[in-house]
Length: 342
Image (cartoon, rainbow, N blue to C red; front, side, top):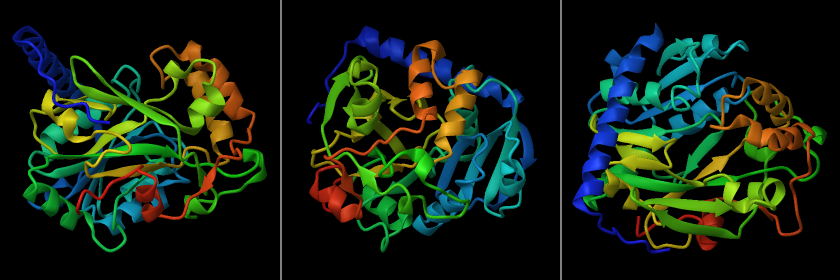
């Protein structure tokens, strides 16, 4: 897709500037909701690449999540623990490259954690390349096994890029979820080895100019009768951060507006990566039942009760059109990521 950096009028631009300032102000105020557990940010060097996340009860995923991104070149993790009770906080506090904060405030009221993470980015990430990730996401890009994030970000800077976009690609097992097992520290890709190669559709939204990509497995399985309600799959996870920036909706959209044009979706020639989405491990069944009760993950949680119930039932997400995941070369060949000359 080629959306182009469509211009907007001065009135819309003015309103977006004030919207960004409002988001930064509420993020600044949210600092009072965070309690430092182990602040190691004094160890952050000027060239460090940072990763930031909000987590809750992710002890099964955290060992692989941290190791995967350490191997890519993340130097320091800034993590907010939202009232975990499964040992996640204790595990993270023991990691020498993790700075940890905790809060028991509402995840939804904090813009699904964005207020907390934006404050930490304002305070600690200015001038750094920064990855925003969920614990169920594994970031990959062309040549990621041989060229780390420091090499990638140097290349991006030389090309004049401040942002590197990605498609969030749902991975899943073959057969019902209940028929599989997963233990902390295991490679989730050994369990979740299938994905939908197509269809994906993309359009630009105004006035932000942000991309809106939908499709894939979750739409096929859970939202076939209402595709416009299916999840947004585009993200801008890697940004050379400034304290003047603010994500608007997860990392699907960002202000200033120009940064949204750093990703043009599947099939474009623009350099981009993929977030391998490991949500559908067997543990997803229990988590769906818990999160339905908590009501913290959607603006209107009641509208997604059926989705939670379907996941809790442990469905078979595989279809005859599913493709076994083989690596980044396969994703590039199918147009889901692009090296762009990198």
